[in-house]
Image (cartoon, rainbow, N blue to C red; front, side):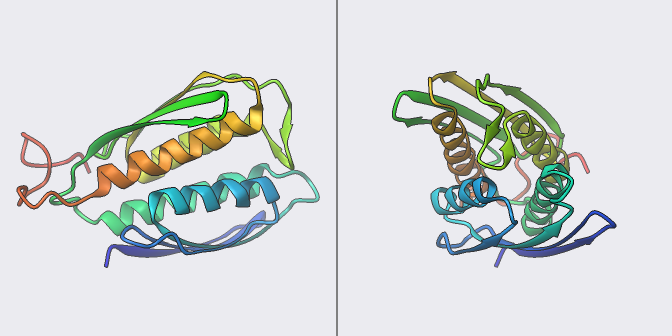
Length: 196
């Protein structure tokens, strides 16, 4: 099974995260940040990933460290679970609507970390999660998951709907990109290797 468990302990946070690529959407998530739990639950459900997250952090300061460290761990778990990435499809994209909002996420699991995030939010907070943090979470996932990740909200009025569309699109794009192509015996690169 393509699965990884990551533990991260700092003076700011303690995180235990398990991630299974070929799952069924099972979740057990508790970050102490309700909206983040909601987005991670959507991510796992729509990507058919199994995801367990237990996080405690300095929420008496704010949500930044906890949310950031969860996505560092998620990226590392994805990277470890994929191993040498032999046989994967590698690139994929997904458009997902959520009522009046429409989001696009495109990913390339070729090993080169890069993130582009294009979305405007009107409200400063989504529940307990700062809307400005969403860019940083996607960026942290891209860096530690060693992927190109492009995310864009094409349009929408409601910030909750925009965020939900982004996380569902991320899930579906990653699900498609991590699929194993039975025709491919080696890594998905004409170079014969992926960037380490």
